[in-house]
Image (cartoon, helix red, strand yellow):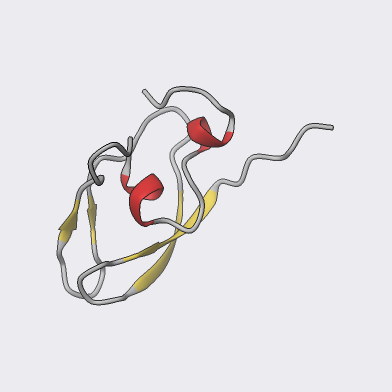
Length: 70
């Protein structure tokens, strides 16, 4: 049984706590994300491949599939 890939994640800004539901890109990593409230530019934490893996409620599709994020 294959587990379905989740394509939406809620990003939580570590600076102001603002939460925003976003659709994750399927074929690429997203390295930057601007908070919709405080306008802070978020970057992945050390060791994470993208902002969804660092600040999202769900890791990116590549990580969900067990592949290396490119």
